[in-house]
Length: 275
Image (tube, rainbow, N blue to C red; front, top):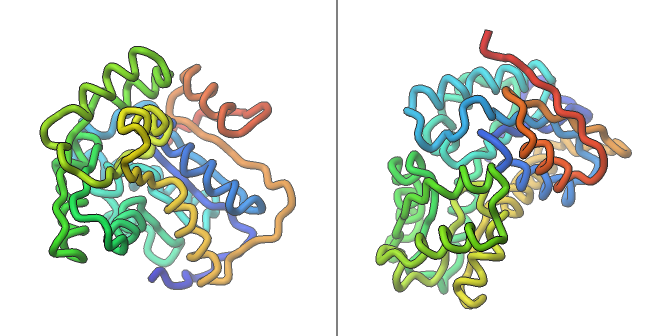
């Protein structure tokens, strides 16, 4: 369990970062569950996608972004990216120390899956980096020796979603080609192990004719954030908090996606944190 960090204030914001728009699914779930909390979001568009990067690169990006979020006085830093959670969580947590609470998107999902006694064979779709780390299989089987985990890298999905291709013929063709792979045969549940993937969850559910248990991290992580705030007495009572969205590079698709999740005019600020 995350313990209370030094000098944290309930009025401080929650920091969230991802390689692109995927973390917005987590941010959206947090605002729905915790409407009084102020968010500071960082989308590292300049280095998208993280799934193809080395572990050392991911750790470097994560530390620089974590420092940026610490500079914004964030009380919690949510690594809203499965690849960064898999490859850089411990590094980022050590770097942050007692300055903020660091959460990842993997552990809360693993806990939910392991506690579901009806699940015997879970599939995982994710980036190459997450699949290469084998972190879901290691963590799930550590809790449930009887569970089989089949992981499949689906590298085209992130770029497809970032470009706005979802809920159309192109996205359905790509999604179906992945889900038809032999590795995912006979699974009884599927983890969407990338925060981009909730955007294509309806299409995945359609492929399985709504007979598959689909687990995405957004709602699960939002609940973990809520429980962490309560445990550490860091809930705020702010009214109509103003969220801030930063990017390392600007794209039209990111701005449109931000406006899709957070209705109304959203101002994106470019933050060059690599100097």
